[in-house]
Length: 482
Image 1: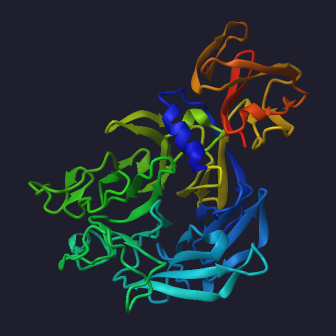
Image 2: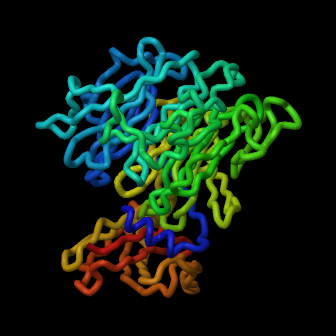
Image 3: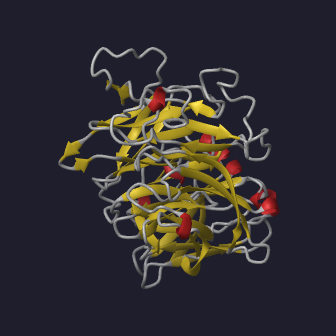
């Protein structure tokens, strides 16, 4: 996935947006809150975190009956509290370690390590819990919860400001508090007296006025963050107070920033309400205001899409508003927000979006708490599916959603995205220097298949595929041939 994402990041300049759709993969869930995948998995298995304390597995689009892990007995599920985060150790294939972020009976934040069963990969050992870190919480809201390993192998934890309203203790600007911060810790090399270590490159190590665990300051309630798989950049969606929701951007490895809360709410003074000192603050790259029609009130951060089935969407950062159920995306290029798109009409089934997630192929998922459903985001209309290709082995490339009983053609490119007009079909492909790959006829349901064997000469090459019919084109699928 990382190789593919890097290839696409270099190849992509600007490409048209293609319509999106939603495909439910799990329904009837109690408060689904997060989707993730384990290192070493293929895209057939994802893990779904539920706020009330269970982690479920969806395998081949089927929700397994039992829980991977059930810690509901120790989780305080109330309001914004609960089981809020999951992170798999980068060496999960070898050590089986994963980490959860939850609210305990006292309402405090706990980071705890568990281990997968030695005999069943779909089951965790419930007795393997080992507490890494506990952080006292003065109120029941603004717990953050996002927990993820960065490209550097360290564990990042997004902490809210401790709650209530307006950060009454000014904790987000207090270097002696872990609340209102982004933390970075080393779970593999504990320091004396701790169950975790301090990375020596943390930006405030040695500063007597700032805790060594702190990576960044000034967060109110970071509700879902994302490391871009291609660049390592960190995206932080920070929930606002009364007026403004914001998205913060951190170039890879550039810690030590102060994102402004409670001095600022978005790009605007909060405390004091005017004339605030903005020196040294990192302002958001994007903000939007609260409105009543539609009712916008709370940002849900998403992911930078780096999957393989929608290559024209590469590099887009997706996010939603929990209250309005709107979903948007944009690219961030040369310090500017560009190619802004509103996907709300396409993704209108969403209700109470609480997070986005990814599978092993980088395909995007959405947790819709309002209807207890986890969706996969897929191309709308004519849809091309390409398996992982191996040189010298036969493969079937499948088309669905086409006009029934009609010709459908396959094209490919070895040079990437671009523009290739096909006048007889009345379409323009999203491929550079497209080459014909075959013609088939759809069945009565609008489906067809293309068979073939990639030659050994294509091993290690990247191929972009797109299907088309008269008046319509499919998504572009990109694949690196094994």
